[in-house]
Length: 449
Image (cartoon, rainbow, N blue to C red; front, side, top):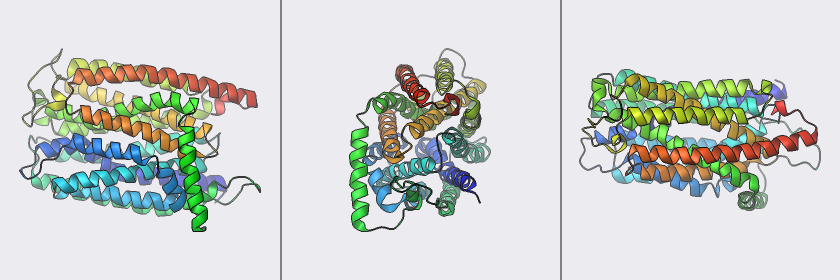
């Protein structure tokens, strides 16, 4: 197998592994609050929103140390161990206990930081400035396929159900736990890159499987990675991209946890309200896959860079927010187990609700594929600290959003996303224009990014 084929193989295995793990985790997040409100066990007093807030809060703090962990352990082993913790969190729902639920939330927050830092390293090591756009799109499309499979099962299994029984819950979460473990095992198939660096050049490719070296060397790399993360976080490019990243954290919370809960709380959807949560997840996934595929695989033919894709993303999201504002009752995110009979500015429409799910997924893929691409392009020599900062900002904003989702009405959640999204788009444009100018100065073809 040629070096280029091996790199593409690694990207595909990386994407398929994440697809399995996040088929389990994203389906879990989509239905968690609905499942919890239907628990018969009065000893359980957990909240899906609070759990996600803990996860993303710990996730954000852990991103400060995750480059050091990846430097010591190596990306492959980091992803395997992290995958095990994801599986344990999902397994908690088989027999929920409040203390175990929140404890697992802390551990998965740490595991997520390590997992995504290692993923960014693996993606960059197996790409160059000509393939980073394609590889980002391939990975993103495979990752977001996870939204399709798990939610498809939820749609058919929960058809006609207005209450989720203990048997229903256990069947779903046993299956999701097994799926997560399969994805974890697949990480072992990622192949080490051969050393093609010239003497004296930093050997970043050897990091893909974490070459064995002395403990002193590993500790030195760990300290260097931490210092580099702190220093990098105060650069102009990272500070500007942090606004865009903050928006992706807010809208991540909305489409992955809040919107499904809103749909499941609308009594006017009748007996389909619970199964529609699954259908919503499916169409979010369709939007994600379509966006990842188009903007990734066709990136070589894009003569205008990343800005038009981000512009499309914000326009699509603004249309979705407008339709959701008109279609969904204002109290839907915080409705009790009985749901809500309120009406917004139109009679709640299933078709509009599902169409908005598609728009949310499409817009999210626009932002994330281009953020992955520009980070891999700007920091191709040392990617781990840059991706750690990206996930730090994204996760801390997701944690804040999950926290206020317990209390804020729908209209205020939408308004926050509109404001942050507007400014995040402007800051991304600024960084992209500067990157394009630097590329032209180097004499490279702008359309290749």
